[in-house]
Each structure stands twice: as C-alpha cells, then as structure tokens.
Image 1 (tube, rainbow, N blue to C red):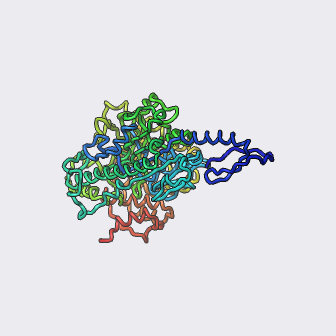
Image 2 (cartoon, rainbow, N blue to C red; image 1 turned 60 degrees about the vertical axis):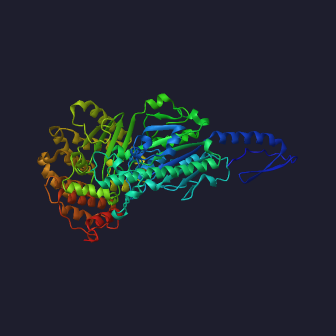
Image 3 (tube, one colour; image 1 turned 120 degrees about the vertical axis):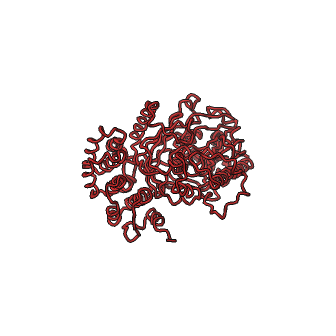
Length: 639
C-alpha cells in the first residue's frame, strides 16, 4: 500500500481535495496538493524501477535431462528462448538433493545443518531466530505482492509468508496493478511420482523420445525398462517446458513481461535412481536460466544470451532476489547475491565452490557432506557402511529401482553398476569433468593426494564454521536444539568441533587412531562415544582389540550409542544384533530413536543377512510414521 506523508495540522479548510490511494481515502488541502503529487510521482517511479520477479521450478530434475544443457533428448524450446534474453548458469546447485530441505534452504538463504532443518520429512519443525524470516516476508515488507502456486514443504515453523499460497495463486490478484510482485510456481509433471507407473501402464508408442536414443549413465543396467523410464522422463521435461510457456504468455497478456525477471530452475536434482536423495551431481546439479529484460540488464554481470560458469547455490537465490529488488540482504543469510547492485563479472569469476548435505531421507538415514571446488567433487561419507541402495519405500516404488536391485541379487551387474549396493569408502573424490557420472573414486590415488587433502580440510573448516548440527543425533536435536537451532549451534560450537574431530579419526591409519578411539569410547560424553564407535567402522576387523569396550557399549545409557555399536559389531560378525535393538525399541519413547533402530534392522537384515521378527507391539514409539514405513517393508501385507 502507498502511504502518503503527514499532511499537517492547521485549520485551513480552503481548497479541499478528496482522493483514494489503494482503496484508502485521504483529504488533501490545496496547499499540500503540490507536495503530495511530488511524493506520489516518486512512489510510482520507485515501483516502476523495481522489477517483478518470477521463479518457475521444475520438480525433481537435474540439468542432465534437458536438451538445453547438452542432452540429445528433452527439448525445452521455451526455456531455450528465455536463455536468449538472459543467462544460462552452467554450475547451479541445490545444497540438498531432496524437496523439503532444499526448499527451506532456498527460501531462507540458510544452510540446513546450521538452521536445524536438514532432515527430510521432519518429525518436529525448527524455529528460526527471532527477527529472521523467509525471503518473501522481506519482499512484502518492501511493498511486493508475493504469491506461491502452490508447493511449500518447509521444515521450519512459519507465520505469514505469502499474500497468497494456493493451487490458483497468481500475481493477478494484487489490487494495485502497479505494485511489483514476486511469484513462485512449481511444476509437478517432472516429480518423482511421475515415474511410479506400473508394468501394465508402460506405453512405448506414446513416447516422443525413442528409448534407443537414450544415453544411460554407466552405473545403470542397460535394460528396456531403464531406457523406457529415462525416455519417459525426457518427455516430462518437454511437458514442463510447455507449462512454463503458458505462464510466460500470461505475463505478456498482462503487459508485465518487459518488467519481469524470470528464474527457471530445478528444485533439486533427480529423479532416476541415484539422483534425488543422493549427494552426487545428479542430485545436486540443477538447471538455472535467468531471463531479464533490456531495462534490467544493468543488474546482471553477464550479457543476454550468455553462459555463466561461476558457481551459485540455493543459499544464494534469496539474497539475489532481495538484491534485485533493492532490499537489504539480512545478515542471517549464508549466501551471496549473484545479480543486482554491486555484483560484477570479477565476482562471478571467483565463485567456484558448492557445499552439499545429505541426512535423513524419509525413513532412510545417511550423514554425508560434499564440497565441489572447480572440477573436483569431494564427498565425506560419515556413515559409509550404509550403501546407497538402503531401502527407502518411496524410492523403490519406481520399477527401475526395483529392477536394479533384482539384477544385483542375481549377480548380473558389472562393477560400476554394483557400486550402488556396496558400502562406500569414507572419502570419495571425483573429477566431474572427466568422470561426470562419479564412478571413478580418486581418493586413494596418490596423484590426487594434494587435491584430496585440500578439499578435506576445506570441508572440515566449513562444517565447523556453520556449527553443523548433524553431529547431534536427531533425537537430541529434537530435545534440545529446535527452539532456536542457530543459537544452539553457536552455544555448542566447541563441542561440535570436537565431535567432528572424533568421527574424522576414521581418516587416520589404524596405528594412529587406536589410542584416540579408545579415549573416545571411554568418554563421559555420549556423543563422543557415539562418533567414536562410528569411526571404528572404518577399520573393519582391526578393531578387535577394542571389542571388550565395544561390547560394554551395547548396554550404554544412551540408546543411540547402543544402536550404532550394534551396527558396527554386527557388520564384523561380533554380535547378534536382535536383542539390543528389540530392547531399545521396547523401552525408548523417542520417535527418532525408534526410527534409527528400525533403520538399523533393515540395514542389517538386507545387507548383512541377519534375521529379525518385529511388529508394532514390540515398539514403544510404533505410531511414528517413519517406523510404520519400516514395518510395512519388513512385514508386507501379501506375506
């Protein structure tokens, strides 16, 4: 709403003028009229100088499935046309490979492990600190109309974020058509669920992309099903493109197209197997095209119809929008603008780093971090013993996922195709230009030792600097951190540094790590014991001298220590895991502890051959949805 300045308090009643601004009535005296008109002209000019900004998001897709990014399939003529009037970003990254974490990062500009919203399918939402808001709140305070159609999926407690968020939300509902707007619209035609077809629904004749023309990743088995699934997904990209075209036509119809900056991007990577929900490039590397009118070209460091090689991540998107709108970027945001006032080509040339995080995905646990610098990608797998193939019910609704697993069980996969089903090294290093599919791990190659050590060190510094909260198991996050996760992380900064050092004992030779691990296993701090046990997993049977103490930890006072210890001992066949896990499930009221124990049961059954008989009557926190998912998998209704 435009609000006029005070009109004065004298009693001169001559020359009264009645006007209305945005539905609000004002009475002006003639001697104030000139001042008001000058003010109003300035407000109109200000509104005209502020761009409308539109975000158009295709769900669950990486850049690898668009012809615009070099694929032979997946033509997207509308997106390519936008690029002619803007910039194609060659290195745009979601910080997380899954919806709720990625979108919360996107809308806050805050890294998930710092803000406490890094688990997908939150059990309890995190609170932002007082005075910290999501990006549209700052835009609305600055006079923007903000609409969202329709997906939100946030992992934080929210208040009034949007003027409208619904299936039909649009900028067209703002009452003052001169008011600048921010509009966000998601397109679900490319969502993972689009690939949840059944065998009897496969229709090759309906495809536009010939399955024989598909370029499969080397880690995929070359089967008719995989080819059909990928061809079908290329077609979904073209469908999304046409839906984006419809929005652009609306902007043109309303006469606002030349006042509007348009961002098209994927809301994270995906969605064929080993992409969404995984920290590889397929899960993080997204398409990004930003179209800007001629009148706003001064806000962008690159020219229209250009390609930008500087790295941008989701933490940078909200700061960029605020900068384009002339709104001060809050200090709470972790990202930096890549367009708008003050951003230069030199700035973009220096951007060559992207940080990624993966934690719990629905009922499947993982703790991994990635750092890409230039052409190299470093991954630290803190729970490396969990294979990528660990059951996630939603993932395995896709026929291709299930077929891949079936072929593995039948021994019909080659080495690259089998990696998905094996435990990972604690460190992975890839040259993503030479090896774009990340199948050749260079971490043990002495020729890359300096690169490995540099990226390892950078990642350690990064995690300590943001107070990475994954060093606190999820139940402890819920109990202690989520009222203000950022403040909690600051308070626990020293402990987080220590805990990271403990789990990174896994990177040392056994001769150097043994004594330090012994101290960790005997610590008074349960979290130190937990990460000490986790580090032990990297050494396999070498940990035999520590077995007496590890067996004592099966009765630890902390249930998470018990769960992790039983996993590590069961992997090396040094215990039968059933009794400990059953007792934890029977005694713990914590939903997060129950979810972790059920994760361990599925892991040990599927990947190490242990037999479990478990039902809801044995679980104190059986009502937790993530526990229910595990029970559905372990006890299918047709058996």
